[in-house]
Image (cartoon, rainbow, N blue to C red; front, side, top):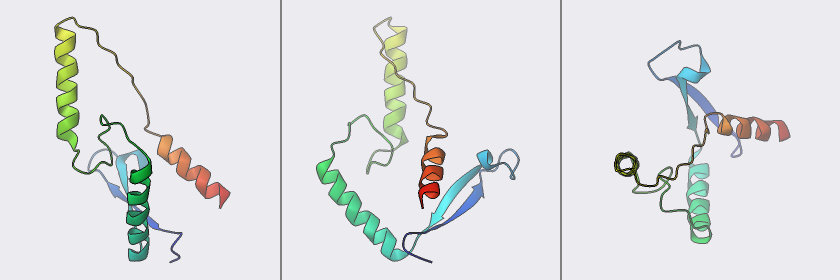
Amino acid sequence: MDWQQNITIPIWKGKGNPADCMNCRPIRLLLHTLKIFERINDGRIREIVQLSPILCGFEPGCGTTGAMHAARFLIERHREKKPLPLVFLDLEKAFAKCIATKHQSI
């Protein structure tokens, strides 16, 4: 296996038809050298790029608890009839399209 490649194994989520891709979670098997390379680059990128503190995905120490507290806060503001700015993003297929585009360019 080359360092630029990985093996992706679909793991069934336990609901729906196992043959349907939407009911599976992709798991990547990477070489140890690639994992080290990713960690080094992640550290370098985080030194340069400032992520918003409200992001909860892929952030060390930020799990679902923070997102649940944010959701509760928004619900309380709604119940109190206070202004409630919201933005909805549907990213369900965004990563699949990025991956497909990358594979086509290789």
